[in-house]
Image: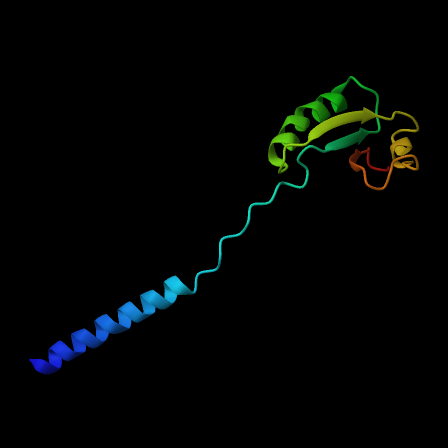
Length: 108
């Protein structure tokens, strides 16, 4: 009977030690960070004219982009028609630090 009680005590002690070790070895809570795109503007450049099916697709995607990008940035469409879409790739006047997405037709 005494040996059985000793086994139970050892098991209980081991469980308490493992539990204490688990609780003491938890990582510290991470500090909250502001989303990167919060308060910024993303420009979506479309190589087409406003209106038409491509414009409808673009405008239907914009709310989902705004919703699912952390920080909910302002998303502005910009249209650059001409040359069948390659005009939107001439982004020499765009600053390097700008946030933009280019939507152009695939080359044929």
